[in-house]
Length: 299
Ligand code: ADP
Ligand code: MG
Image 1 (tube, rainbow, N blue to C red):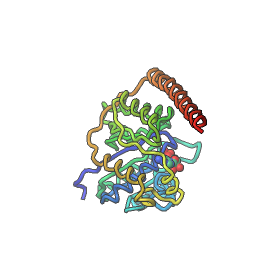
Image 2 (cartoon, protein in one colour):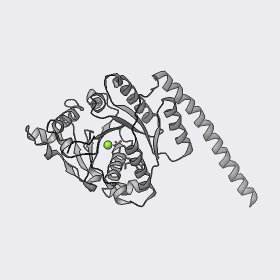
Image 3 (cartoon, rainbow, N blue to C red):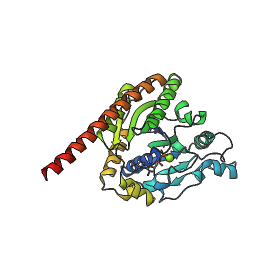
Image 4 (cartoon, protein in one colour):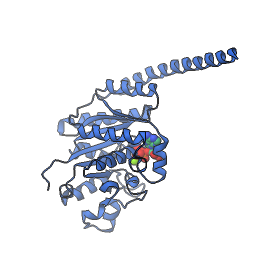
């Protein structure tokens, strides 16, 4: 017990971008491969782990701490699909206090009672809301609680903007033993253009794409049934993609300091893509028009 090294990972990204969906599928896939996994939800909404538990929500650490100051750490851990240990840090009542506090309190509770070692974990995965500007959210990066950071991003500007901000945070903590960047999980990538945008962003910021995950109805259906895609639709193409992603994360060893863009660089970069996008739309509209005209001619 406690001899093997726990691989600690934090997954960040803009709200609604697909962090919890992706993280839960990674956890489920790793559990299927025989690993012991803990998924640690750090969103004040406490909705990270419910698809690992048939759609059921678990009480958060902050909630339980409010009821009982001398909480036994085992009371905040609930097992889900494949034996995955689920924890939700939780947040303060809306409008009161710092939202990052839940993360600090929850990590402290489990650390003090040596729960991470006791459970003999292979993977500890933090699912962290990345667009809130608050020190608490930097905790997994800052205090060396995680070693590798991955970010979920689509090709949308606001998602890339959040990823770039995260890169700046990682860069600033990198000298004091903070976590480094493993790469980008590109979510909702369904066409070549979206892929090119994200590829260009990772190249500019000196990182990499771990996997391109398409937006898929299989994910929606699974979620509506309260399950991950790995559980609900294990033979689907989407499940195969999540398994491949989990494998890449398992094999990943060398994280790096990213090279974030400055605000001006980011603006120029997005402007250059905006003009390319307009040119691309014009040409596809023209192509569609020519094709339609050609078809009617032929009739
Ligand atoms: P976050 O945790 O980043 O706030 P969620 O994981 O809760 O985001 O995802 C937000 C919504 O988007 C959910 O309804 C989820 O099912 C959906 N979603 C995320 N990724 C995909 C995908 N690849 N295909 C289809 N739906 C997705
Ligand atoms: Mg979430």
